[in-house]
Length: 267
Image (cartoon, rainbow, N blue to C red; front, side, top):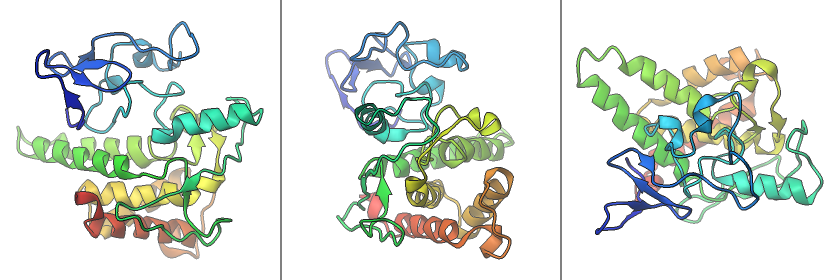
């Protein structure tokens, strides 16, 4: 586990905030819970693994993270660390979890050194996000790189590429963990049932570049993969744009990659 959580030296348990996790067993020592009583907190009936209240990130620790000891905030991890912000904002403004759109404005995303990313279409002039800190995206990318390298050096390495493709899709594909512009289970890629937060399009594409760079991809590989996902799942295709992507998508993907390449997330 690569969680950076505090370990109790006496018990050997890792403290996540909401509860303790046993890395030896690969599970939490107590069931998940929520402030508002629910029979099965944070679970989704179309995702059987989410019904296990002791499981750690649905048994996928190489490409998923758990920032506070709760499995997630909606039955899926697509909302990342900003999930509580979205839920609270929607509740305060009378927007139901099943609504097709939310206008939650978010906060300006900040790089580790304190700089902001320009956002020309943002009312603040800065790239907006459900969470100001995107270091969790970088950490997940690093873990993916570690997992990929382990697979390359064990056995025949045939599982390495499928693992990398799956990790990219789960993390930054449509409805993925760090696709902040869509809220809902990733299975909604097929049904189109996401709650849309178009105001977070820029940061979602930034996350693609940042995650991919940290996962060990080159810029060309990142853009090629992003273009493939874009052509398959996006409704904003632009054949006149670079690699068939609209210029905004392309530019923020490059910015995210450059942010990771700068070493800002290596400290």
